[in-house]
Amino acid sequence: MARAGDDDGQREGEDPLGQLEAGPHHLHRPVPALAEHVEVEPGLTMPHAAVEILRQRLAPAHFNRAVVLAEVYGPEAAVEAGFLDRVVDPADLHAAARDAAARLAQLDLAAHAASKLRARAPALRALRRALDADSADFRRRALAPRLRNVVPIPLSGAAPQAEDPGAT
Image (spheres, rainbow, N blue to C red):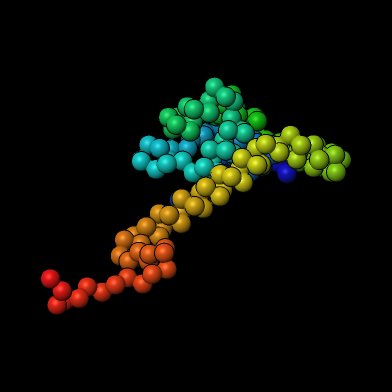
């Protein structure tokens, strides 16, 4: 399926780039600033999974700039970096998406799926590890405040002994 990006009517909190990165063919209309992953700028650490998706998608020369330096890309630079496959005139956007989808629909699905899995196997393994790491990070951060008041239980199996108030 081809994805066509059109920011008109985008609601606050939506992630058009996250949606774009999930598709096999990336089209977008020209907009002033399009591709950005700015988690780092306000002090957020980029999730492991996002890093792996961008590692697979972006040109090596742009990976560090986008992930670590939170560089913002305009439409043409987003094509060069690998965020998009091409930028099309707004009037032609939906027709271009339909044409790309029609072309993709002509592929032999079994050969396409097998080739895609073979080509992406290392990235899929890395993404699985990244999702597990993100899940562990989330659990650690979500549970950390609750664990501050937990009394440790000795691993030896021995019950903690109460102090004898009369002992000297």
